[in-house]
Length: 193
Image (cartoon, rainbow, N blue to C red; front, top):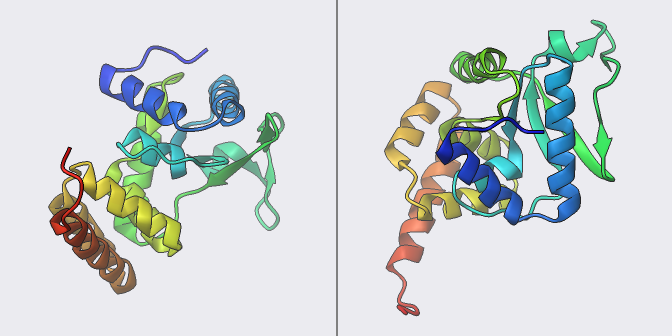
């Protein structure tokens, strides 16, 4: 059972889960509960996190940020620690560990520290870190999700300021292009009902 979350997080999670099929919903719940039982700090990332931040995203998997030390065994060849689900409800569960430039790693570790300090609660990646992760992946669907997030009123200046600290020109250029596209779409005449 998912512990009671602060209202904005709870509402965001419910909205995100409303946008996916029941298998993904149950996979999210199952893996969150299992990771909490195992004492593994975990932060929701990926498509479900996009939904929490305001754009329902019909993802087909569940993505978590975890610490390598708590979730994996080995050094040369990493294997999952016993009990960590890699599939639930026939849905893939993907895990990412902190990586990237120092400011990104610092933000990831801060989110994981929040998870560790609040066992049982769902911690969601901050939007600026989510945008970095989506733009780093470089897929068209991720860029489209960023454009839609910008349409929801996310603070583009705050996001851009974080991206500047990451120092990745390609990511920053992709974000600037997404901002321009979102502005163009806002300026297009359309149904104003």
